[in-house]
Image 1 (cartoon, one colour):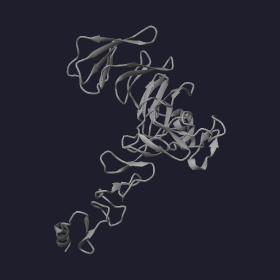
Image 2: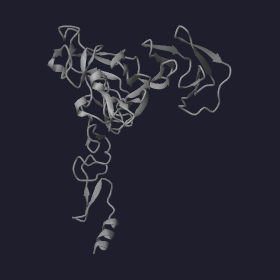
Image 3: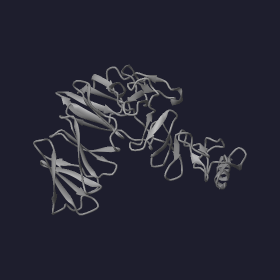
Image 4: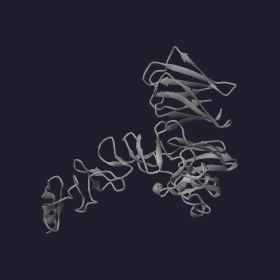
Length: 357
């Protein structure tokens, strides 16, 4: 009997936008907005019909239009959030077009700022919902103070110290580095935290990123992902246009840049000279942060999409698109001088980043 029933079920071939109901032994229609489905409810879609889009909050739900501060992605399949905080209308390339009430758009920075005069003082911050016109001297928990835009920006709430394991680092660790003798720095993106641990993985000290006034983390694929580096007693976090560096020994944030001109990515860390190399979204400049001097430097290049290598004490920057190679050396005045070479390396794999001592 069971074999006959299984054969009967397998023999059913439903049309697109239908699902087979074993109890009624019939093909039933999915919700009108579903291209296919795994249930008959509106929250059970597998793909959306034309002119319907996957919801940002629930990918199993299709909707006819995106919500406020959302936009249809470049593939035209789903709604994604406008990444510019306070923006209620943007392009799929994340260029803000309209800011929320009591905010004004700065097109040069692609940023929504509090309108002049909304707050009594330039040292106050406008809190969401922005139509309330509520200004405070500090932002509440789970919000960070953006001094450039003069608004409180929401960040994902990180666990507080007392919520973390009291004695052992038992969460997922993204990276680990030597800190002192028999002590290590462990970084956990998932827990929004770092910890100094001993060789037995016992916590000596720990800190949440929320308490060092950094950005929160986002887990969605369409959000800006956080990057980090470790070098000696220093560690840094880069998220979109914000970059900050912390001294793990003093537990002090020594550098915090909130408005880089473009989104950046960490490409390479030179532990010898204490330099952190980054690229912008156009990959047209050599950018580096000097850890010891707490300064960001850059050199514009005549090439795009380059590969960076370090061999001995020289940097080699070669274009992936044209036959051009620059050789850089670190100078006594802490700058990097570049000269163009007449020869290029050949057959360098994409994204290779390495060095030899």
